[in-house]
Image (cartoon, rainbow, N blue to C red):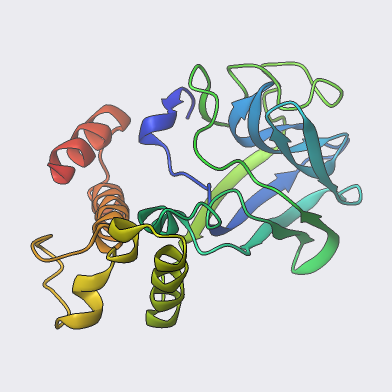
Length: 252
């Protein structure tokens, strides 16, 4: 599956996430792209180079953080990349505070359940990936996230059985909201200090309605709605175009 626009692809920005990929390596080894989003000027790629699993984050061509594992023996393997995000997420922006985006995090590359590489990213991409790139599975239809590792299209030469992606987006706790409000008031930012007020003073609202929600909760509600629509579309076993149209209609 290639060419999914970034606007229709799951975003990993400002979140924790976990990839699990089941592959089968033939005799003689394998290489190629497993999954990628972005390219030469920002994005990530999970791929094999001479049968070695690699996960690379290209931080807008300023720095590349790279995890590499040992050469895989022929046979079935499960490759995993687990990333734990340190920030509070984009909801902090409602309080005039950008500390929740572009924060640090730690990634762990695993092979068959065993950690083979761990790297800390001091900064992450805060807002968008390269818009002229796309989400590709099984090959890379755009530019490489690392020209030193491969050239496109870099089709995978093994067997790609399954990719599972779980995303855990941070949510502000009542304590986080109180601290952010106090910081905004100390800075003399009245509107930002009132963000999230509805959720702390009123009962929990219905998920189906945004009435009475502060900006923080509206952002979180929109993200939750998008994830719910994507899961429902996948459960319907639709084709790619039908799935994208379903998600668009579900979000309206």
